Length: 375
Image (cartoon, rainbow, N blue to C red; front, side, top):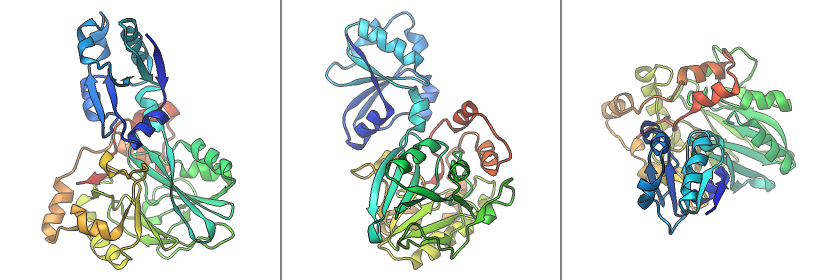
């Protein structure tokens, strides 16, 4: 029977469209339990490939013949081997091109809105990692917010739509993924913006992003209003774009809120986090569409694969915005924390410019799920 290649983009479309897919993951059980490809209608079987070296006959009854089967491993090689063994046994199967390494790096652009005077707002969904980044486009110019290290994707997309990247922003100093903002700014000549309270140890020049900044993109005026909103980090800054969209960074998510501990400051910053969520954000229009820098679970995706919700809906439904007792809130965000991201200290140092790991080291540092949220 046949073995075919399935790309990360094709799997992403299946996630967005809620299609059925049977995933045969041949990584170690601990790796599978920690992080896997998620979809509403996906089914799973996890057997480490080294248990299959003598053949697949004993597990054939566990593989369906009435739906697509995708074999997944860390980097591709083991999944090709297992897929060929299943094919020799009479099954039609696919393997994931590039394995989980490629899944972690795939970015899917989704248009999330039209701006006043003809501009566009795009969300780049890093489906395997839960990261969300943004491109604001107007009058042939573009601004990037919270770009990942896969810089060519943004550069190629901007070229494709005929826009020059003139400004690059990071809402805060990231701890769970390596920022591509500075590299994109260096490549394009764009201005790189970073909150100064997060930049006290950086080794490079930047434009200080502070409360009240206004930046114009393109021939029409699109104000990107910086809203100082500490809590996830001491410098965390939100943007109100075009009076319609709240880019909340890692402060507020659709189904959770940001964790305050990734610089070792949970007890110090929990008050800032509550002040931002319960007071600063309360002063904003409930009609603003919240666009976060991460999503935590696949249920947060909209029908088109984007991640967004009106601020008023989040105030009504997001548990993290509805804890009246301040002590209970403090306990939740300091004691109810998920494991910290892999290599988060090294990622922070990379984003400060203190260390410069090569591409393989960067990939290894980022392996695993998004862990920026408290829920």
